[in-house]
Length: 254
Image (cartoon, rainbow, N blue to C red):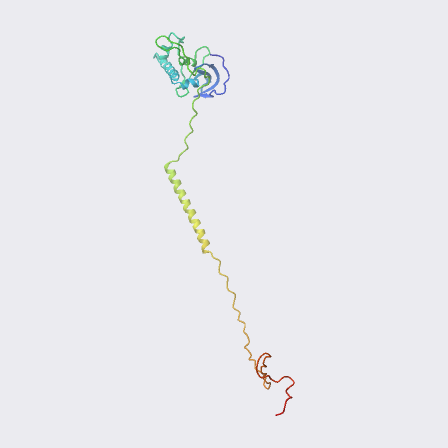
């Protein structure tokens, strides 16, 4: 592992719990260690498992168990971590103080940052095991399939807050108001339609009757002393021809 602080890279979490992540301190096969800032301004070291180790139930359980045993050992109870590391790793005089931890899908632990003492990286040691752990170390060493993963395990994004809901009383009041508005709208439409039906233009008055008196008929009677002409037969008709013009004074005497 490297003890030199390096800038954050793409994929690093900006914040773990209440701690703001500022830089990388160490990168190992089991996890990454970050330099963070606590809400009270203290510098902290935060260790988080890699994505592959977090997906391994056994590795995740070893990490969480080591953190919990460290808390118990500071309370006077000798934990599993101290027994497991006896004769295999150099055990520090005191277990680092655990400020906060998360044992969920992306486990992490935060301890005070002290440049000359072991910090959160201490809890990444029991994650990697060698041999079969039967008594003393026997059997071939093996490497987990996630050893080559160097991406930190990121906690799941927080779920969206449920939409705000109104109380039952408010819902009933809103329903009553909506019903009244609908009834008022229906009555208004009905009145408008009824008014249109009742309003009919008055019929156009008939023109006044004008009586024009006509003169009485005059009978066509001949003048007195004037003979009434007798109808003359047509040329094509039969009958006795009448006297022609100029023949009134002619003829044989009787």
